[in-house]
Image (cartoon, rainbow, N blue to C red; front, side, top):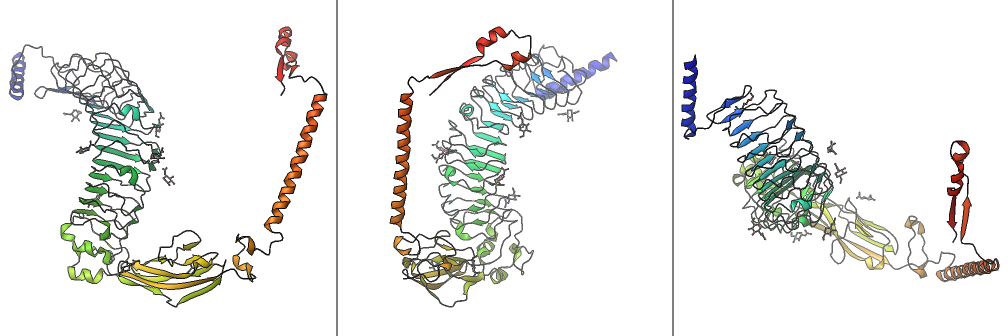
Length: 604
Ligand SMILES: *[C@@H]1O[C@H](CO)[C@@H](O)[C@H](O)[C@H]1NC(C)=O
Ligand SMILES: *[C@@H]1O[C@H](CO)[C@@H](O)[C@H](O)[C@H]1NC(C)=O
Ligand SMILES: *[C@@H]1O[C@H](CO)[C@@H](O)[C@H](O)[C@H]1NC(C)=O
Ligand SMILES: *[C@@H]1O[C@H](CO)[C@@H](O)[C@H](O)[C@H]1NC(C)=O
Ligand SMILES: *[C@@H]1O[C@H](CO)[C@@H](O)[C@H](O)[C@H]1NC(C)=O
Ligand SMILES: *[C@@H]1O[C@H](CO)[C@@H](O)[C@H](O)[C@H]1NC(C)=O
Ligand SMILES: *[C@@H]1O[C@H](CO)[C@@H](O)[C@H](O)[C@H]1NC(C)=O
Ligand SMILES: *[C@@H]1O[C@H](CO)[C@@H](O)[C@H](O)[C@H]1NC(C)=O
């Protein structure tokens, strides 16, 4: 029996020496404590899931990894681990930790990785992390931490990676992150923060990657990130309230990767991006963005990947990616796009990957370029189907043969219906409407050019209605001329001229009802209908004001003399009263109350 144990022990040691390749020293070799399983070769102690209430004593002194996950440990006392100077990895996740005493980890001189996730820690006392000069990675996610006090992390000069998501942090004090001079990556949760901890972040001069989740603010303020010269990657995600990125909010950053996803942006924040000329990767997925406008992203000279998956994109305008000569990947799958025109790109030669699936695509000549470039493009294995065409209902048009394509991906030139000449003469002040409806495939857009051949705006006195009609309200002689309706689609354009002649104000306006009840100031001389002219009104008003002012002045003078005649004016009045409480309750000494129940008022 005794011999067997001895043989067994020797066998273990032999294996240990083989594996670790170190010489046996005279250090005392403690046994593995009862509930844990130790791997003496790998120098690991696994005490996971053992219903432990405290950290077991007498762990082998030479272990490098200690797994204490899924136990019931509630507190860590001072110098809890001082007997484990060799420990490299310590995992205390999934316990019931509420409190960590100051210097709880003192003595873990070699520790590089500490995990405290999924506990109930509410506060981390300053000094809790003392004595771990080599710690590189700290995970305190999924606790109930409310605030980071000044100098909480000041003892961790080697820390490179800190993650603190899923906490209830309401406040990060200005010096909280001081001392993290090596920190390269930070993951924070902003759901209970009311502001970006700009001041605290300025301490992180080596930060390269910052992930900010669940930020509970609506606007990312100007100058949110200062002194972060090395920051290359910024991720802001799951911020359902975030609607706006202020113009200067990213000022001072030189990012290569920017991600703002799962938020409430309804437009691409072009202005804040402008200066990010080194940006390579941009992701605005899962935001209700509706348009990528033309010629607005040109500053992002080095951009290679752009993702806007799962948004509300209706249109990517012509020239949207102009200037982006290195764009390699575009993923806009899961939007409301009806097409993707080649004119959006600077050059499609660089494009390698295109995500366009799950969009209600209209299959016509606008997608012909795409079908032709099939061999050079990676569609991520997704099929592209047409939402409208009867020919290809549910058909992946990437599967079609070349000759089928050019026959099926076609467009029809626009045609203006009812091409009868519209020539209208009206009197000044009347409202005129010109109609222009067009058909074609794809449905053409209708624009109007004024007699100066400038596009008519969709607002104003002369405007284009949503159905394409041109309305000119209260026509003026200078509105006369030839207007041009232009219907255009991918296949080309066609136009229809209409002419308008507005006669200067007539002698008598025969039909005032045509003004539809609007009062239109047309200039003074035109309004003979009115009972008085402007001059009469002015005189009447002046007389009224003069009489009002004179009566008021007489009143004041009278009051002045009257007050003089009354002699000395008292400026204060003293009012004494008997408080009700002393009347009702008999016990109060009423003598001193009469002294205080008196106040003085100043009269003005
Ligand atoms: C440690 O123990 C737990 C529970 O017994 C087990 O699930 C886990 O795989 C072990 N880990 C290692 C590294 O052996
Ligand atoms: C933090 O925010 C979460 C979600 O918004 C909320 O459930 C929780 O009560 C907040 N905690 C505090 C301490 O405000
Ligand atoms: C941010 O800065 C821009 C440019 O200076 C300014 O126009 C804007 O009003 C500022 N926004 C806020 C919220 O202060
Ligand atoms: C997102 O923005 C829209 C419109 O700007 C607003 O109606 C909606 O309430 C916002 N959502 C949240 C969660 O704030
Ligand atoms: C910005 O970053 C790029 C690469 O990430 C670097 O080459 C460039 O020098 C940086 N510019 C400044 C002003 O720091
Ligand atoms: C686009 O992104 C979605 C979601 O991340 C992914 O499933 C899809 O494969 C991507 N498409 C391409 C072409 O990379
Ligand atoms: C366009 O809309 C206006 C106002 O809604 C209407 O008066 C006009 O008849 C419409 N035009 C056509 C061609 O339907
Ligand atoms: C209409 O098409 C011609 C060429 O066919 C082009 O020169 C012109 O710019 C187009 N006009 C508009 C308004 O699109």
